[in-house]
Image (cartoon, rainbow, N blue to C red; front, top):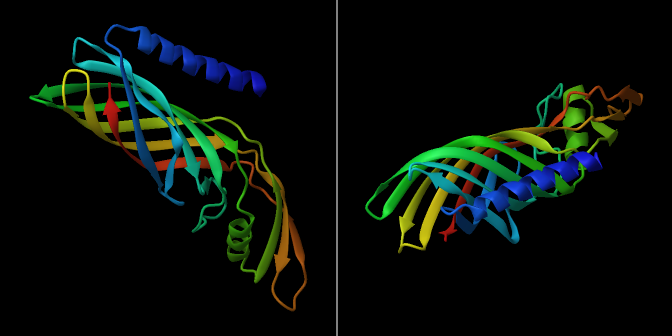
Length: 229
């Protein structure tokens, strides 16, 4: 696991270095929000966002990478035998690294561009939301109460990203941009364990948690504003 994570970090740093060394390189810094399909709105963790690092080809095509560290208050877990109304993965600090390929056109002082690609993510601080999980299981089983004892493995996740960007060029060296992106990614949790519960006045029932296919979901909209240098 450690070797795989190290390879991912080295790969990301290499991409950034290659981009910056290119003669047509640009660097962007900004702030943003992630609005998940299921969960709570996440914001950038402090100033930790460096996006739009890349280069252009023939002034039309572009390659961009970078990173954002999000403070995620909660995320959905998918591929369960039930669908929860609330996020089942609790608060985490999440590193998100995209790699996008796109094209754009400039009209006067405004550039409009679109891009598609992939992204990787990793949770540095993480936990299940036990309260939400217990409520979801009790609703699934039709019980009054439930208590789950679950374990999982924290792994890097991957997905795809599609973005749309509008940039206003203040001068030759500075541009202000607005970006919207849609992300859809997952990581394997290897979720296992057991849970027990039942109805008030009845017997306590214990079951094995058959959640081996569970995935942590990073799915939703990302909105960002910032500047390119």
